Image 1 (cartoon, helix red, strand yellow):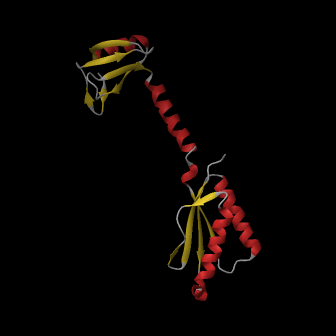
Image 2 (image 1 turned 180 degrees about the horizontal axis):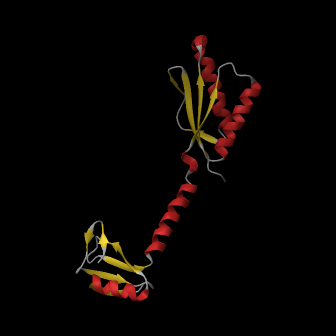
Image 3 (image 1 turned 120 degrees about the horizontal axis):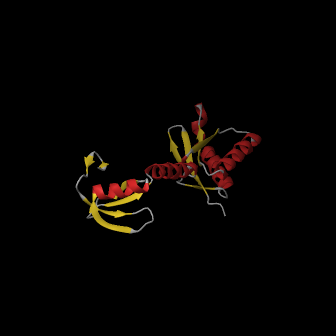
Length: 169
């Protein structure tokens, strides 16, 4: 008997495909199981929604291994969703600015999303125009490596902008 999703399929007609990919035709589940057992393999439900349901004779352990391997490989190439952040201050020195820009370029080069933010402290809020000027400079310096997703936003005491890496050529 095949157990799929908690239901039993005993006595039901299914379309059987053998381990070489050839159609064996519609037959009872028990006959398909006997053929699979003779080949030393399993009878696996491939498509339950079709009429009749399709079963394939294959190694179920290998199927599970291949699925896990495919998921693992997808996760490896999926690191672009990570978000790195670089923070700036209004009165930043030139060397410190260059150091942070180089880190930002490195993050974008590795394919990470990047969030740059600038926080105003105390009376610095009176000089928002200087803060926006600094962040415009950041956008200009990073335009070769990443694209700003949205215009600059002032939220509370922070100006933020998020970058997505450009595709490598």
